Length: 180
Image 1: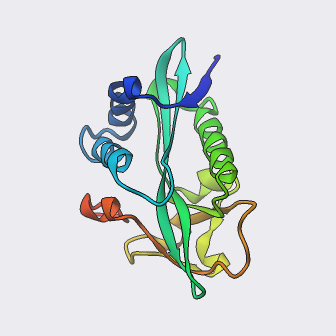
Image 2 (image 1 turned 90 degrees about the horizontal axis):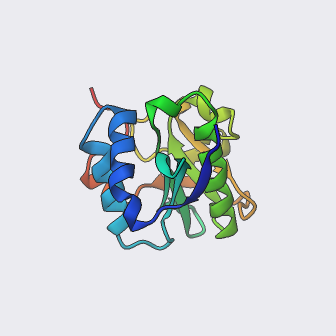
Image 3 (image 1 turned 180 degrees about the horizontal axis):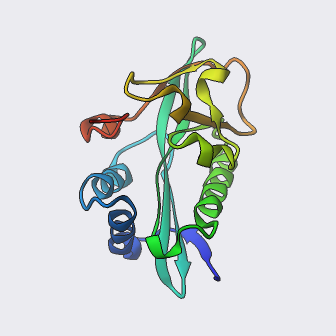
């Protein structure tokens, strides 16, 4: 199938909400996170990309500003969350294409690290590594060690170690770690 990846526009918001509702089976939590992250003041601009097929939004990825509490100073970093692909378009490499485009955008902004919580089997195929292996600490005990992952970009330097800190939006909506 032919897909295009581009920056999200305001006209895409309803379609993005529908994609995440179907991809996650939840009409509230993930769509609310996306809406709050779009509106939140942040040190770095949000990277919000959509995948389209025949001018219909079928995938979405969002990078939002977070921080690394490193010994030398705070470092502005990104969190990749969420990544959603419409169920009819899953299994075709579209998630990987969205990830690659998001990482390229973050690299272009000079962001040194992109963090996420997710399936290590899936995200390792896209270059993510276990964050603990780089002396990076999770912000929550509810995040299993293998699921806390990071992608170092060109601006990464070895002194950038420490604790990853989500933006307030993740905490306010209780979107950190596993529940139940």
